[in-house]
Image 1: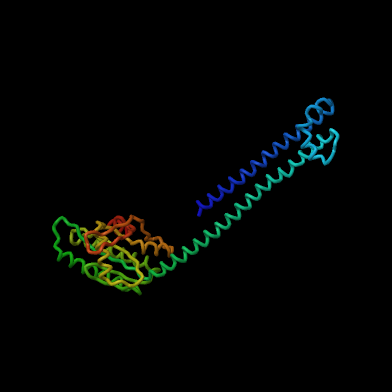
Image 2: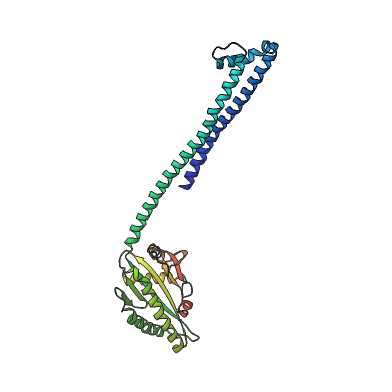
Length: 307
């Protein structure tokens, strides 16, 4: 829109510049002719010989502008008439400026109205898309770092204990579904309550991490993925998405998908807004998936430590 508007302005100004250039040239020509005819009149009034030898060059125009006058006064009259034509030419130059400004302003108003309509249409289209996103899910997975080797069975046991503690606390939040498997999943359609749900999970996870790290002499490493969907997805789908995203080496990070991030910002929320980090695609599987991701917390362990 802006480029089109600038192009129109440039073309219009160029045309008016040419017109005003012709008018300016005409003003200079008229001023020169008026001066020349006045000097010529003064000359022939003092010396008839000048009139005898040169009137063939000056008489035709002077006769045209003097309406039948035959005395040498026709040259002074022609000078006056030519000088008078400068006034409408100057006015024409001024009018050109005003007409140009009026056209530019009118075009700018049309462009602005068109742009407002386009923005309104875009907003309505986005509103439809964002309103269609009715559910969000938070998927948490846990890993552990220790000086000694940790068996998978031990990890699974610890996960169950931690997920149960989280479940006990978070289940008090209304309109929240909780699923525990090898991952911990929260699902809700209450986007307005997202900050509270997510924040409550982080606070509880921070307390659990402090206890686990000290009691078992290891480091708990959490990873979180938040997504938004048009329908309430099956937990298996949420888990598979989370694991695919984790395959991009995103341990110890809290991430959100582009769908959730856009819905979140559309609702004028910013506490847990993510920073875009690009698109990531899965390869080597039967069905390739592409994820446009945002990082909410680059170092989740450090985030938890600050709570």
